[in-house]
Length: 191
Image 1: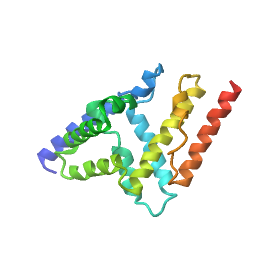
Image 2: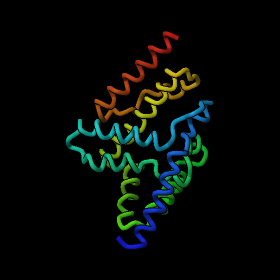
Image 3: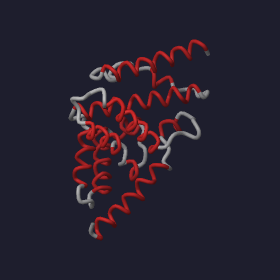
Image 4: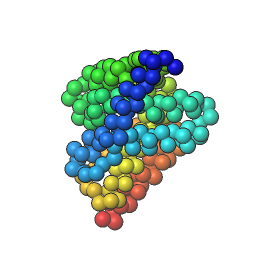
């Protein structure tokens, strides 16, 4: 490996390390403390991709895993922009900022364009693999919301308001999502 590639990898590794320290902003906005980091969330999505990806042999499991790993890496440079950022800035501006961050993160690596292309595929839901990772991203968020509620958090009802669009293309993901909704309802009734 040449010196330039080693230098680029060293820089990338340091930037990615920041994801371990970056809290998920949406949880903080709702008054939660000691929330998961972006890296913890990304690990959860990757773990789901590993096991759920096996249920869909027609998909490229390697691509699913790679997308799960890179899906939030732009946040190492731009931070964790909550849903309100997309609403206020516009989806196009958020996408462009993330794309520029991905180019900066991976642009100097020998195969960096491949990682940027994976992120773009994910971001645009341009393949069945990308749509599965998007569904798993949402599933992991719901699972985390439920975990926070089990620990006593309140004020997370907005996460449970929309039941449509949660993995219809993937029956097993939809079943897991329905289970999370049922658990949330059970806890709400028992409270």
